[in-house]
Image 1: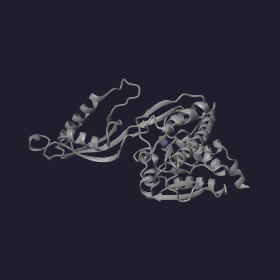
Image 2: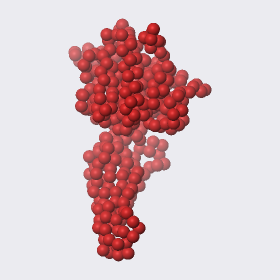
Image 3: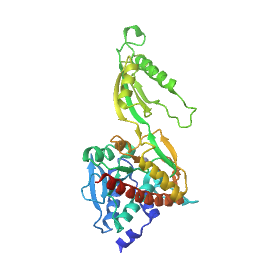
Image 4: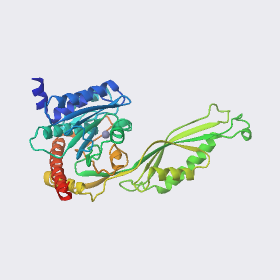
Length: 387
Ligand SMILES: [Zn+2]
């Protein structure tokens, strides 16, 4: 009886079930609970065409549901994350209002995970065999993705031909082809302490830090194009600053943390070199870094998305760019094309997070048609290359 109920769960039911589990990043009990939910959902299907594997890295769980056993190179990867950012308790109770669904994670990205679960279920139960696919769901995207996607791609070794990552943009028609890279850095200055009344006897670490910060600030301010729509230029934001103990003491230590985002013309290594060249009085420490990620507009799988979007939703594709970064970067680092779009939705990470329910159903239809079109395309490719 329970099994039949699971089978009947529709897209909206799955979304709401997922939202009700407060799977905030680093809340291990809830993360395990939501992975259990996914495992039960697929285990209950009782099909021989799905293989469920759970992984753990530093206590963070992930789950992969694949159409072929132990195949690390599926044709199509459906990639999503089950963790969300913190919210008031009330937001974990999803609410329908005026055609919208509100709640933590409905946009980022539990409704999209529900789309992929619903699609994987349909593919597994359909009699027509498809090229291999895998649904990969991780639990740490909101805190860097290192024990989720990074671990599964770079340590376990998953290397799909193409990945669908519905974790960016604000509509199915906006395909996010580029993400800026990230360079989080700490600058540290050291000096010599002395009494504040005799500054000539000391060496002020805060002054050194401020002078170097100004050098960096001037560099980035000269690049500013904040009058443009897409704000596609390198940016630098100072996030924290600390140093000194007392008003009347020359500080011998000061540091700050910078959040630098760079466009596709600059790699992490190049940014490192550039910063080293600017700094004169502080040392630079790299914290989190990631190269910019790009999927080329001319890629056949992008053209195919454009066509399916036109055919199934009668919409024209827009090229999108994202100033933030997502887990897709772990794939584009290996040259794997990443297809990033979303149902009409917005307000991620805010108390007003919503998804348009009609668009969610449209998106589900689009994903179904796109995966089938990809499957046909891949089959044709393999026939012509004689694989
Ligand atoms: Zn997300």
